[in-house]
Image (cartoon, rainbow, N blue to C red; front, side):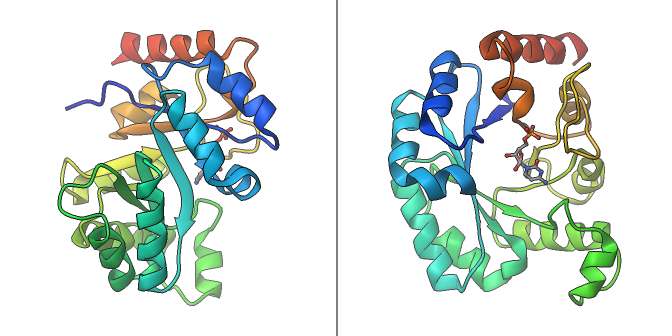
Amino acid sequence: MRETKPLIIALDFANTREAFLLVDQLDPALCRVKIGKEMFTRFGPDLVKRVINSGFEVFLDLKFHDIPNTVAGAVAAAADLGIWMVNVHASGGRAMMEAARNCLGENPTTKLIAVTVLTSLASSDLHEVGVQGTAEEQVMRLARLAADCGLDGVVCSARETALLRQGLQPDFLLITPGIRPVGDSAGDQKRTETPAAALAMGSNYLVIGRPVTQATDPLLKLKQILHEIHSKI
Ligand code: C5P
């Protein structure tokens, strides 16, 4: 079934003033919010709690990668904050992912997803760190492992969604950054897709940053993106 609230807005700011200026303009009925390493390192759990208290479901994008016991503790701490989604690196291996999954208990309210291969890495970078084959093969291998460990989904580029959809269960979640609405600048993103195209290719959730966060009217932009999606799908 298609997700009714597929947009996750990336809160990438160097200060809380700008972050809350945006949060106060957005509508939690229309989107969720992603907090990443930069803001979390500066402002910590207090920021997360404030965003949750504003009514938003939060994806805590900290990409944990450590020994199983440490990652399980970090995932449990994230869940205790009341976050909606958290992630780990699939390359941390089976024991790490299973420990992370198990610490969330039987019917977790926090979704646990994995990063397979960072989209900043090409096959040549992987060869340099000892991974043979192509980046796509490694993405598929790690996504299968994440699914096998009971994780809820993976972060992936729009280009990878079709491949992953073929090889994995239909309810396995695909979360896709690198999204640009029709007519928006790509910025530093190399390969972008429009929101409607990424959803049509099989993504469940789209991570969108600057097209919304830097818009003159972020809520209007959000509504325009949702309109673009609904008119095309
Ligand atoms: O501003 P923009 O839409 O490019 O922001 C995308 C967000 O998704 C940023 O927070 C970025 O760190 C994150 N991201 C990404 N590409 C990945 C993984 C995460 O752009 N492969």
